[in-house]
Image (cartoon, rainbow, N blue to C red):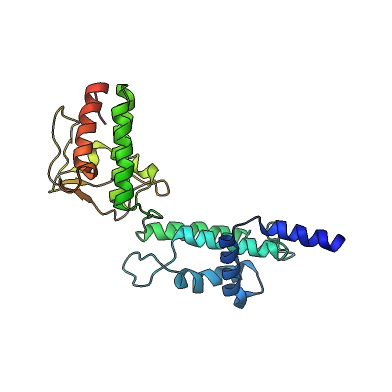
Length: 264
């Protein structure tokens, strides 16, 4: 009875993570087998000499070798930490007694933070994890447009127009995240010669140029100073009307100006 209860408890414990997470944990454990002394410095060597290059998918700077994205490296440290815990290496690592989880150490945490900052400095930009395809974007836009016609309230309609503009902006930029997109301002709007469209503020009824070039000048959630090497987003009319960001933005700016009496 006792052994049966233990087996049942073990089976329940296995359900604490998904099969996908368990597979990733086992996978990184197999790759880490050459560094089995399991000290923080072995973890550092493992990542610096092997993991970030073997699992590289991001190209930064002038280097030709692909490197692991900061988020991917941090996730791998998490999986390795889970493996250590399953082996009994629990709690913060103690350098004096060599007891504890080597991934839960000062050295590893500083390495993960330093790796992020070094990648930003080299020009790394965050990418959307799984970009929506055009069919899904069009379906979502049709739903938002349907909500717009169903809303009699002017403020609610403005918010829906804003959501449409934001969604298209994030979609066309590919690498923008919600926080980054929320930083969009009039000073980010330029014509084909990269001249500011509204250098002194919005002009009522003014149309947007063809093409409209959007160049984000503010920082990101992870890099407050600026978007390093951010490619401009050039928008021209054409294609499905519901996907026309230039037109959608033009309409929203006018409606917002009329309703709120000012645009920034």
